[in-house]
Image 1: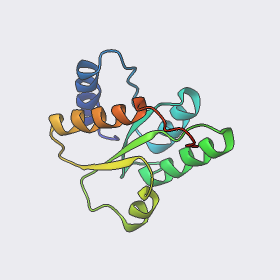
Image 2 (image 1 turned 90 degrees about the vertical axis):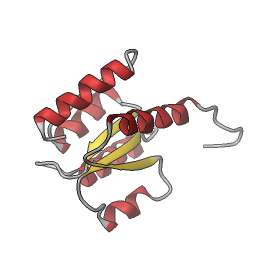
Image 3 (image 1 turned 180 degrees about the vertical axis):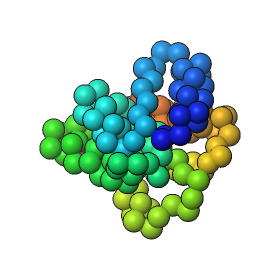
Length: 129
């Protein structure tokens, strides 16, 4: 998130809710892309409207990195205070993505992340890619 206060609240809340997880933050989409490129995060909470590179552009860059490197695409939770653009809806189709609307209740954010964590830890059925 590009809003310092909101980003700080998200980071502090998630560190308390998930003490075993490493939580990183970025103030723009390019920083988010670069952080993913370095650390290959399993879950990304991505604001849709960010400076430098918006959430959709950052997601597409992360998706491209994953395709190039042969990495698994992370679980992505988009966060927005606006209507989700149709182009982003198309990007999300068939992927492990979800969207929460700001202002987001902390319990909703934590539960959404918990659901994505469960997907990450679920066994992969035999014969799946």
